[in-house]
Amino acid sequence: MKAVVYTHCRPIDAEDALLDTTLPDPAPRKRDLLIEVKAVAVNPVDTKLRRHADPVGEPRVLGFDAAGVVRALGAGVTHFGVGDEVWYAGAINRAGANAEYQLVDERLVGRRPRRLSPAEAASMPLATIITAWEMLFDRLQVPRTAAGSLLIIGGAGGVGSMAIQLACRLTALTVIATASRPESVAWCHRLGAHHVIDYQGDIPAQLGDLGFRAVDFIFATNASDQHWPAMVRAIRPQGRIGLIDDPAPIDVRDLKQKSVSLHWEAMFTRGLFETPDMAEQQHILEQVAALVDERVVDTIFAEHLGRINAVNLTLAHRLIESGKMRGKIVLEGF
Image (cartoon, rainbow, N blue to C red; front, side, top):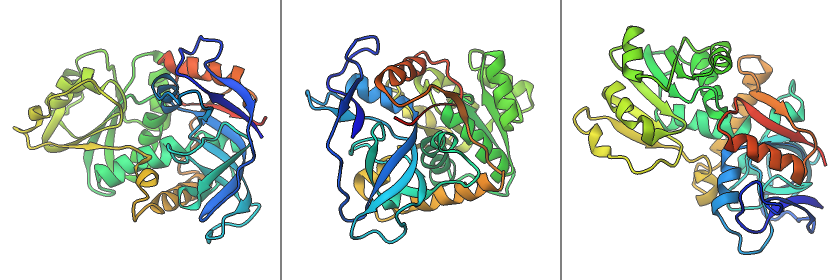
C-alpha cells in the first residue's frame, strides 16, 4: 500500500521530513477494522511527533483524523460490517491514517455522518469528539442546562472551533472565545461565540468590560503557560480549568486559594491504555454524527490541500507550525 512516513525527527523544511513509500498491507486481528482511508486531516500532534518522537530509522505513519470505508473485519468485531463508511482518530501507539489502509480498534470508530463528504468528515474526529467533547463533558463536566460562563482560549483553532459549537449548541453557558486577527474573530462569531476578546490583551480586564468578574470554566487549547497568570485571575472560586497542550512548568499552587480544580485532556488515553470505557469514544463519535446530520453541529473544514502525499503533507505541517491556521487542513485520496 502507498503511505507517507518519517524515519527520523527533522525540521519540516528538510528534504526527508516526510517521505512517500510503499508498505505491506495490514491484516486485522481481534477487534480491528481494516479501513480503506479516503481522507485525512492534519493536527498539531502530527507535527509534534514528527519533531520529537524519533522512530529510530523505522518508517512511522502519522495521521490521527480520517474518514474511510471498512474493507475487512477482525474475528471479534461486533459493531461494523464490510462497506460501512466510518470516521475516527485512531490510536497514538499504532500506525496512523497517512496510508491507503489502516487498522483501528472498532471501539475507537464511529459511522460517518451521512451529509458530509469524506473530506468534510475527516476534519472533525480528533478535535470534535475526543478532545473538545471529552474536555467539556468528561473532564470539566460542564452542565447542559444550568447557566454559567466558559472562556475558550484559542477559539479559532481546530479544537477551539469545535468547543465553541458544542458549548453554544448543547449547553446554556455564555461562551467567550479568544482571537486576535479580524478573520479569526469573525470565525469565532460565526461558530456561535457570544463574545470574542483579544488573547494578546489583558484577559481579565476584557472580561470585566463585558460584565464578568470571573468565569466558571476555562478551556485553554494553547499557550497555557503564557496565559496561566490571567487564567488564575479570571477563574471564579471553585471553578474549573482544563488544559490540552504541553505547557512550560506552571505553579498549580496558584489555584489553592480559590479551590480551583485543574483537568487534563489527552484524547488518546482511552485507546492507549484500553480503559474499560474505551468504547465511549465510539458512542461519542456516533452522537456527534447524529448532531451533524441534524445540522446542530457543522464541520470545521478550512482548507483542502489535494491528495495524500509527502509534498502536500509537508505543506500542511508547515501551515500548522506557523500557528496561523483556523479550522482544519484536509487531504483526500492517493
